[in-house]
Length: 111
Image 1 (cartoon, rainbow, N blue to C red):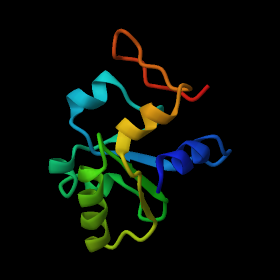
Image 2 (cartoon, rainbow, N blue to C red):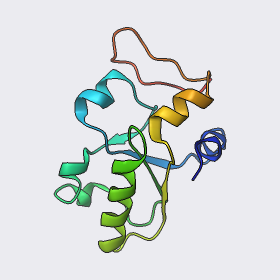
Image 3 (cartoon, helix red, strand yellow):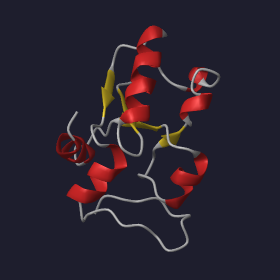
């Protein structure tokens, strides 16, 4: 899924379930509101935390880890999956509607 389409999906009443597979420290610096953080190395151990019925949109820093995550999830029987091409880099580049807080504790939010 192109980052532009992902940003448009965030504006719809039914937001996608966002799975962010970046490390906890990356996620702590900036993340999207209501995203679920499960770092890629922990994904298979924590797979029970994810709904198989939900459409999961997977995101990482630049798109590499999220593509691996999508492959792993497909192998585990998940069917409703999207990978954000370019990851958070592309999202940040395309959108000035997202802001990073100085304390790193408040999630990025769509305006």
